[in-house]
Image (tube, rainbow, N blue to C red; front, side, top):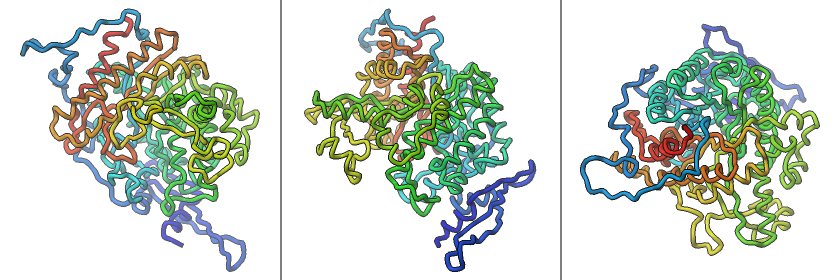
Length: 578
């Protein structure tokens, strides 16, 4: 048995106990099969503290020199001057900027919210500070070779845990009205359940209060991929139905604490993506007998049940809360007019947005083509579960970055669905970024580290119409993440070239104009959140790709607005209804 297997056993079935002033300790029964002497398990008792978790599973972590909460410094007025063509300097003279006439038929409604988003593991840093225990991403970034292509971690990230006051002040100074952040589950509940870390709750108290102080709407996400390590190593995390109760209890703690101050909530972020992490790398986490190809669907099944349970908890405490989950995917463009490509598009919707949108908005069950597959191994939702899931989103929240052309596999859809070894099984559709001639891109490409992303803003109005027509969200649609990684931005060394981001600037200008078109055509769009507040830890790409509307010098932790920040806010300066 490997060392990692022994450690998994030590954490199996962890039950935690904590006194307020004592170290975090988990009293954990450990079991192992004794095949040579009969079926009786060997049982022992161990105690594992938060520090033990770091030592056993992660190892040393990096820290930054600023390790207490700091007050914001005044923002220099020079940093709030937009770049041309938004700003016409009085000197030097001679610059010629084409006149852009305001379209008087376009407008964002008065109550439209517009801001930026960030996620705990990607920005907070302070990895071991004030009782936080490891999440799966601490192990993935520290221990699994090349899981993060740059071998970087979120140990320090943007040091937001200590510099959040400055970050919120900068959001307000720019003129944005919303800040969407996620809470770290393993800060609040270091073992995923059991003892509550009051220091973490007090920290988020102040984040929320600081937003309110600056007139910024706080929006909170319960889960943005950083699963507490103990839950993964105890029962397999999202692969087990046990996650539903633990997530619900976590949601109850958070809702009870903040429901009077935070009115916009997201339960889980992009379940299609985090469920796709499964199977997690072997020899680093507790494994399961579930076949690899099916694991993400078990994860999704439990994520839907956990989301629904959390939604009802929040509503029971405050019926006025806006609570939703965040979907992701992209607009699916039929590449040719063939019937096979039309069917491929239908399958793409069912295996992407429809996977979580149909159960929530259309009756509590899976869409047709997804259901045909998962019903061969998943227990179907009961009538009670369908009723529990149905209607558990007050808006349609979509992280809508891009679009793709969709077409059938070369071997045909029918042949694919009958062949579990087919590389496109079980979804059995193909996608491409190029038009049918295989030559022209759907839009300019993002950084090579984000090959899934192109500036496909021409398709945004059609995408928004599709969302409204298929799922008909009564509270409207919100684009809860959108942005683009400026190509090769990580290679730039001087500040002026770093903050001049023309592709990202054009992306935000054109995307927001596309939203204005859709609104003028009757689509109910209620808000947008740019991804992201600043360049941060972009998961498996580390810090090698940049999505921020602010640049952060990771050596000094200084923040600088990019041109795209002004392009983003300018659309609301021009078109927000007064």
